[in-house]
Image (cartoon, rainbow, N blue to C red; front, side, top):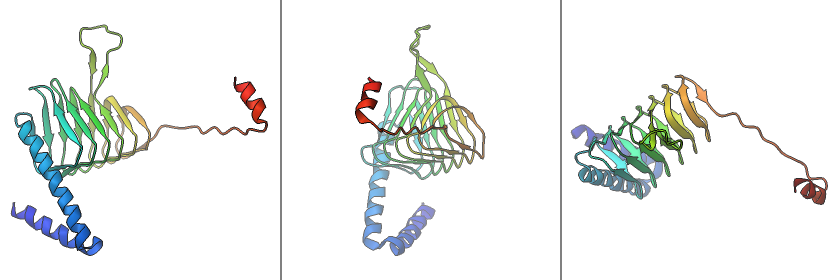
Length: 211
């Protein structure tokens, strides 16, 4: 506890020089509220969540729908606003130390999702370890898999990560990518995009041809 207090004091002093005392206080108060929200969810789901100190900011929520679901949250995990985390069935969600999750992200876990240490997730990222069984070849309406994300990974904005994906350590996932399968460590992953621009010489003719 003394180490934590010392770290908070050092951080406040450092941020006070860079931001100003007033704005540093506002930031600290926001973080404190996030820690209290995280503690609230830990209390509500005391049988399901095991965690160190973590921050869950306003309008973000954790929903657990099964007594067998488990959530493990490491030290100094920071989850920003409007993020939705849902765990069901025998789902196991692991957020290791110093994971950062930005605004408007969605994590849906029914089997296993693991996010490694120091991984940063940009806004509007969606992570699913399952698909809906639209073929209805079995009683189960879900097809379950896993998502394993390594340490020191950067995931860009608007990325969708699908079931049965393994992302190696120190990897960058380019913004807007759809990821499925194995991504090797120490690599940059992105979906190739083609940009098409058409000149409209005769507007009326172009519309007629389009119709």
